[in-house]
Length: 208
Length: 222
Image (cartoon, rainbow over all chains, first blue to last red; front, side, top):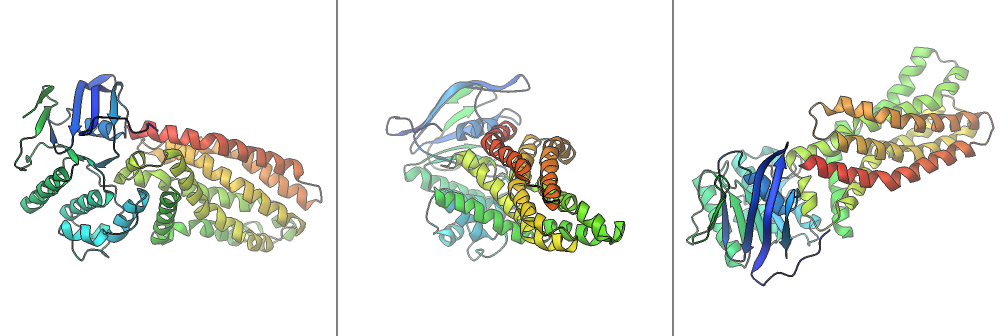
């Protein structure tokens, strides 16, 4: 398991010339990104351009065919599937996330309240709607206490209020010295500051 | 670190209890075997005593096999398996915990109820100790080998057929030596050879399989 690299203070993750192939065809190649504290990285591109694959590469779930990845912190990843257990209650799910990451069990109810699921502690995750499940996924991000957030289509299944919640949580994470990378092809985040944009369709990286 | 391993283990057990019916399968198999087989082959004690080791072992095998579909696939499908690579623990340790919880749910109940089964099938009392030891050595091998097959077939759609095909050739030596040990013990001969080979298989499986499972999971996660 790679040990945390020594990166300059504000750079939480650096990736150089990443390439990933699927069935012999490159999904993306020669992608370099830097995640800096307080900055948002927006990953755009049409379906199939590799947004999910890139995020999973950055998260360390899959390894790139070529390229290097350095990170100084542990990452939190929230994908299409939230990784939460349907047969357990919301609170049990959040407590598990805490224990699994070596943290003391606490703050489950605060996290649920923050994402608009106050009082859902004992509800089974299987009884939640799609939007509520996404909110529970956001709560699991909050309790994981990680500085790097990698979000794959965080606005999916959420209404306007849910989308606004995601924006608020992103702003809080950035203000707290963390960094966020997210992919979207619907709604764009409204956070007041211009994000760095990476377009996987064209391979262009724009900094504000 | 221990806290995280314990978190996974206790969650696995909690989920097994929540899925109550499925978790009682091992005991269902065992009791089906000891009730139905005497009805099918006739209640003659000599015949039953002769086939008792095989029958109990078949129940252990089936219970282990049927729980394999649920070993990694649910986590793979709901996205919690990929979180294993985001934790601070090596995936190897998490694999060991998962295989251990599988054994607790499938192997341990068989071991605990084996004395009752042996009694009902008229197994020679001298062979009971050997039966318990053979189950204690062999059921972990079932969990390990089955876990490997489950990890390899994770990304295939109808994995369970392929899984069974993969598992059976690896299981046969375990079955042969375990039932052989009990049979010779029932005749008064020392089962040391058979049990020694079983123990060797267990050590081999414990050494190699978790590594292989970790690699197989990593491959299938992509």
